[in-house]
Image (tube, rainbow, N blue to C red; front, side, top):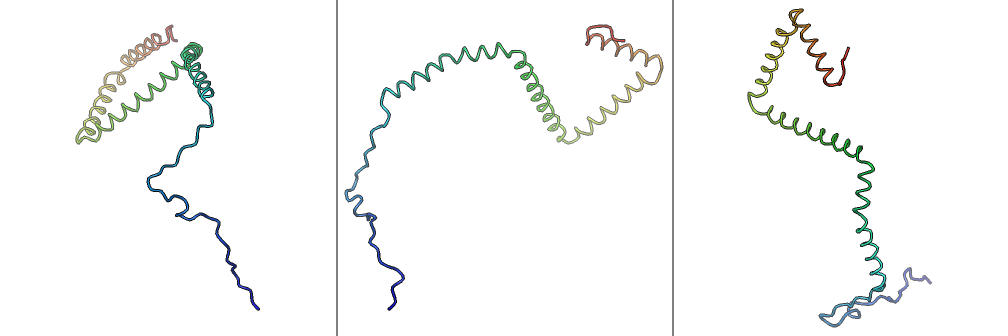
Amino acid sequence: MQEPEFTETKSTEATVSDINTQTGTITKLQPPTQSQDQWLKYGEQISGFLATLPEYVSSFFNQYKQPLVSVGLIVGAIVTVKVLLAILDSLNDIPLVAPTFELIGIGYSAWFVYRYLLKASTRKELTTEITTLKSQVVGKNAP
C-alpha cells in the first residue's frame, strides 16, 4: 500500500483571533534596560567633551595656522576662478557679445604689436618695463 506524500501536521502558530481579541488595546512598552545612572554617566561624558571642545579647536588652529590659511586661500582662489569662468560663460551666451569680445581681443593684440614689437626702441622699453616689474615682484634686482 502506498503512503501519502504529505502528512498533516498541526500548526503551532497562533491564529489572528488568538492574538488580540480586544479592540483599542495598545501593546505596553518594555521598561528600559539601562538605568537612569547610566544615562547620567553618558550625559556627563558628552557635556565634558563639549566643554573642552573649544580648547581643542583653538589649540588645533594655533598649531596648524599657516597650512590652514594656505589651504583656505587655495580653495578661495579656486572658487573665485570658477565663478569668474561661469560669469564669462554666461556673458558669452548673449548674442553679439562673443564676437565683440573677439574684436576687442584682436584690436588690443594689434595695438600691442604696433606699440611695443615693431620698433627696436619700443622693444627695449618693453624689456625694461618687464625687468622693473620682475624686480618689484621678487623684491630684488633681477638680472
